[in-house]
Amino acid sequence: MNYTFFLLLLTLVHSTFSSLAPTDQAALESIRDSLTDMPGSAFFSTWDFTTPDPCSTFSGLTCSSLGRVSALSLGPNLSGSLSPSISNLTHLTQLVLYPGLVTGPLPPRFDTLPLLRVISLTRNRLTGPIPNSFSSLSYLHTLDLSYNQLSGSLPPFLTTLPHLKVLVLASNRFSDNVKPVSSPLLHLDLKMNQISGQLPPLFPTTLRYLSLAGNSISGEIIPLEPLTDLTYIDLSMNRFTGAIPQSLFGSTTTSMFLQRNNFTSINATSLLMLPQGSVVDLSHNSISGELPPSLAGAESLFLNNNRFTGEIPEEYIKSLVNGTTKTLFLQHNYLTRFPWNSGSQLPDSVSLCLSYNCMDTDPVVGLSTCPIEVAPLLSRPAIQCSRFYNHSSTG
Image (cartoon, rainbow, N blue to C red; front, side, top):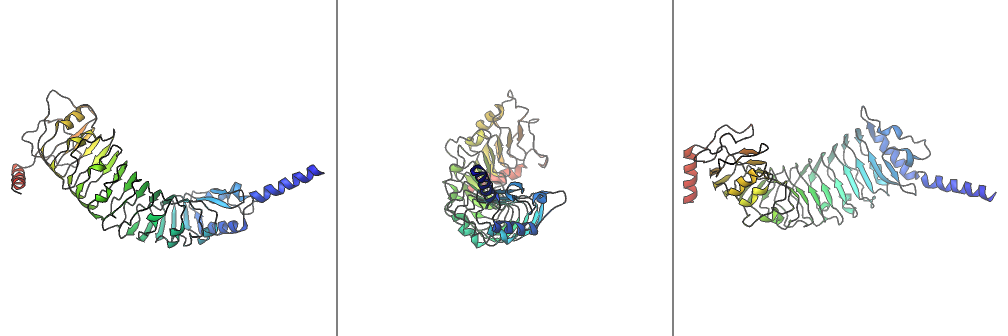
């Protein structure tokens, strides 16, 4: 008799701890009503609210031992909108919306979700601003709202959250300027927005990944000088000016994309140690002076469409011949000589372009492999070169 009573008690305890809390079930019903499977999707096929234990049968649902929803992953391939009832899932630590056609604003009340550590709502059609209630998410580690249609100014509180490590707002319609950053960010991606103004005075030295590409940010990038541990930096297609700090060419930087700005010089006077396999793109700027020998160690180096002058350093030739550099684009500059040894041979894997410079002769006819969009002119007209050099010497 005692044993039978124990089994009944054990069954009762198990059912209590595995069943869904009524408030959470009501919230899930509202979420289900606001979203629809797109043709070919069957995400909601398991969401049967007559089942005794949704926690163990619903797709995308994880519950705590108390029957509270702790993680919710929706989709992919859903349409509709996000229900404000999400704010009733007060034990939620992770909220994910996979790519689909979900529209409308973000739920307004995130201040009722103090345990949230991950919010990832990417590649949908969400609109409107980021709610002020995000400022209460003191435990948030990752926020990814990329590839939506969100708009408004970048909220200043986002970059002050005390535990935020990953912030991705890429490809939206955010405007205004980049706010001061005090969060201990490792990853910051704001590319393809409508951000303008200048950089804030300080960034966290914890940053490893930084992308601000495709905005309208101007001014110098001096605030980035302390970021000596960056592995990836993309500032392309902005309006930056001035010098590129030497500290950005660090031993950890494997990818540097600074093309299509208005940079005028490179502070790279001392020996640099670019990591093996690195990509450096400084093309389509207004960088003048001689080529820094220390950039020769990059695997892919794009210095075309600038105002570089003088001879190409021997280090570049050595790096090409030994296969360290596989792509070297130097077209559309004012370079005067490529010190090529006719006895040397370039590996078949090398792509080299020297078109439209001020070479006295073309020492590498047959070696040049320019991209298809480059005009087939081997050299600049002599009058362009003489005017450029005469102006430089008198200026």
